Length: 205
Image 1 (tube, helix red, strand yellow):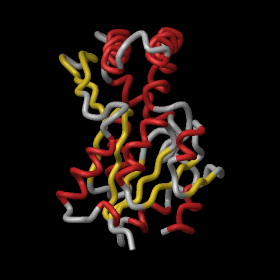
Image 2: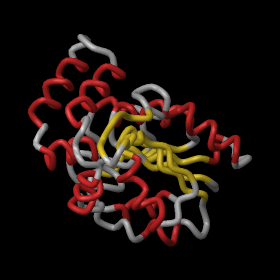
Image 3: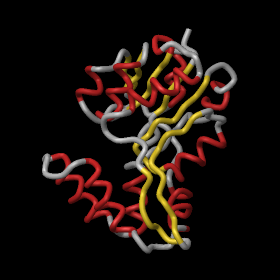
Image 4: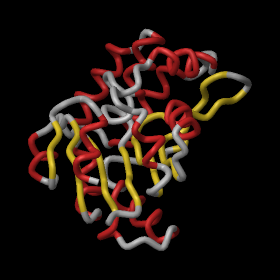
């Protein structure tokens, strides 16, 4: 029986295009961000450079835009099951998304750990980002949490939807591709759930 469940945020706990893109949409920088993403996926810039360019689009903007955008993001259908899971499992969020947006779910649904990328605020304005999660290190973070909780990786479940979740899938004893966005996510998962309803994960716990 699994003791720890690690969830991705965007596309798993939150519905929509993801916390970064939802904030871009809210602020009005979506087109510029899409171009940055194309540059990353074509191999022209590093992941860190992609994030640096994205944050530069927001620098100096009022920080309350983050919380305003957070209120507009839809929670994933069936997310209420998470509250009951917290009674029997240690729960973690491991996300390349925005920590301020993850915190809302972290507090409400009694997660024990939350690793995401926090936007740094200075003088009540967006200033920089504290990068904790990139495209390669989700597996290392899961390992760190498991070690802290004295849980074997074989007793961990990882739930994600995108290619950056694959390192986490490879470390966990069991992995669930939830509404996967890429074929390679499917290939690396033990189970695939196509329905966007978190209640479906209960079948495999």
